[in-house]
Length: 282
Ligand code: OGA
Ligand code: MN
Image 1: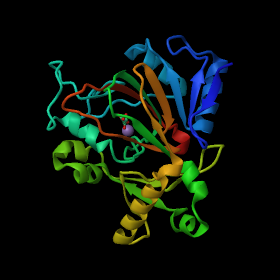
Image 2: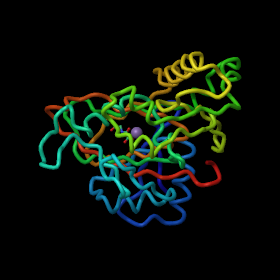
Image 3: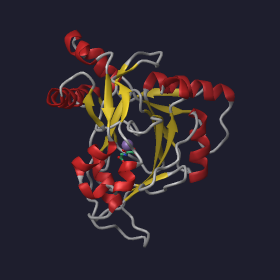
């Protein structure tokens, strides 16, 4: 049986006893799915991970997303987050991939803006900088539990509009083409995720633009305030990467964000696979 060691008082655990490079048994798959529901963030040591073994392991958790046009890895199952250009050298700050990394520094749930949102993401560290470049995770389930009833009441049973063109334009208008924006029209998502057996979670993040039934300006203050609250110290686990780490997280229970590093001087190369939500919870 695999084992867990808690990394934070409220969520996140390190897992031992699973070999990422081997097919996962039915018993281990069931254990892993329950552990993901329960802990929201799972950290594995996977020093020999390859693109193929990452894809195979990720499929334990469901159907994988196809990477969107405009992202590094478009059309395949991998999304590559790197500051290394195709010539093998560190890319300039104007490079689209480097700008994408900057956008990732805002608290978000992966793919909350897509017609099919993401259940889980798996990110492996292939090259890491000597300093910085940690990834932070905020438990929006713990945040929901800690919210006072009046604040909860303001948002629950409502739909938020998630709008990728809007959220990316806030970071840098050069981040996406009109065609990329048009490929992701705004979608409506419940403000509170209800399907997890371990409890409900707030679901807003960077792409949440407005909340139906709440005037736009008031909604902005509410959304920013809730993202700040969930992202405040008590609910945050900060992962300091070791090369070969694989981190799996539940996008329906945590937000996450990248943190800065010397992107013009040090190399950072990460590979992500993303698991779609099953049709029952879309
Ligand atoms: C991601 C992401 C953050 C990071 O892979 O979805 O937001 O630290 N990554 O690279
Ligand atoms: Mn992300």
